Image 1 (cartoon, helix red, strand yellow):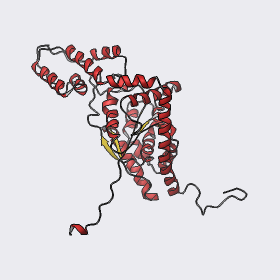
Image 2: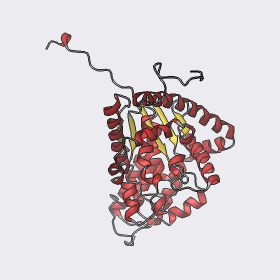
Image 3: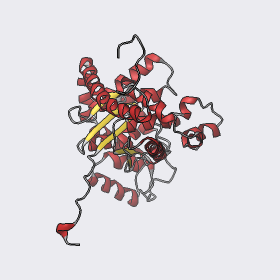
Image 4: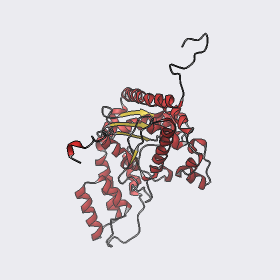
Length: 347
């Protein structure tokens, strides 16, 4: 077919990034390199919506004052690390009540078996832990979080890909029943997100109590780093940097040239792990120095934080309201022009 007779290409959907992070503790290196760093990079890719997932946190945080404090600290931390409210919408999940109503609409098309197969629920049951209905329905709320903003791209770690699949399944079922209501999102795997080791060599996680916090007191942080688990090979023995969790942490913080020199030192041998730990302390201090300075400024201005979150919530509610109205009308909720009125009541 001649080029001038080809049908026009369908319009590309504008990129809209959406992600949330739970305020179940202060952010650690795994949170930053596994998620937050990509939030910062993607805020220039199109519309970006980032929320502090306090509703999700209710499944584990049961102290009201602590939750409020963690939400406030999360907002400060995200802004200090580079999230720009002029380029991205930052808000608190519970400030957008449209999402909880949308969750119920999705629950009505969600098979029980779909949720029973989800990893978080299965893992907790397999360990003999109590799994409440909140944890069971967690993926539905997560789906509403995504669909409420017509998100096209969701940055996630490998352990969250299943939840994006659940979201697509629910959106597809709803669309099949009621018409094209929801935009189906695509996951974007966070590069290296599953490879941030903790102080014991396992994946860094609050669940494993092996984290190093981004904004931890420097003296306390240094103690944690100096206690990182290492093997007992002799000082003079050459060591392979590949897969060494101490080297992996250093390579996240250090420049490419410094990382290369450290790799050469590993292969040459004749060093102690204490030397690497001291280098990691220095690299981490330098890497987060600017963010620490910004955080101190932001912490001194709580009104600014409240204003950023209020503005973000207003923008998020406007978008979520459009999607919720679409979904309500599609499935028959709410009045239309043809709806009967109750006698004696004003329309």
